[in-house]
Image: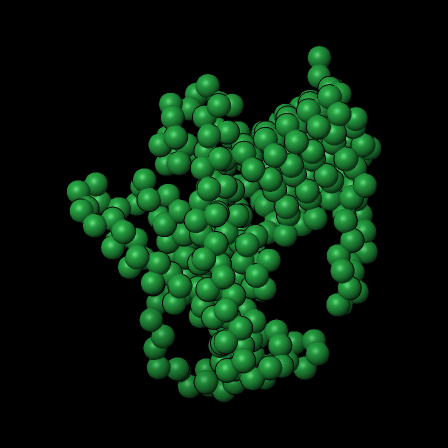
Length: 286
């Protein structure tokens, strides 16, 4: 949008009327705002830069730790403000308590970044080993949309686990808009995860994925129709469990919280699965 101008006659009154419309439960629009899409994109880019210092800075840089340290400082400040907005809009605590909470959440996430990088390097290696088209780690890091989506998911998942609200989902929705890969930050995904091609993949909130799993474009790990959970209750397991070393080929759909795909199973393309599959079984594969 363009820079705000002086309001035309009547527009200030219209703005006040818009702000007076309350959400369900009586909450008015607050002064703090959630980040814009460009804010979230900038956060995502900063995370990718610090998690993959192989790209994102000048090849002639002589002080890479200094450069990354500066990026980390800006990232921490921006993320803390975003997390504060996500928390403060949804609680009745004072602003100071919410700011302190946001500071603690972001500090824990920042300390976890080396662990997240280790997980991502295992994902990179899984791509190199599984995809004969990959020329090496640099191509995977710089070019693969699946890795981009996984990287943003791993940050968002940790942020959600530490207590962040709204912002984790905004990050994964940004990755979805860029890659077509929809991974809910609440999903649990093990190490050495490889997404090949990726467009159209959906991974639901309560999905559990083990280690060394490979999935292709168009795969849905979804839920059978269920009612929305009551406020304050724990979300039931609605999405499937995928055990270690499973391969799921393009456009397969696997639904249901009680559905377990056993270790080493292969799910063929275009299959529709709502039942558990024993380890090592090949479903719909010619």
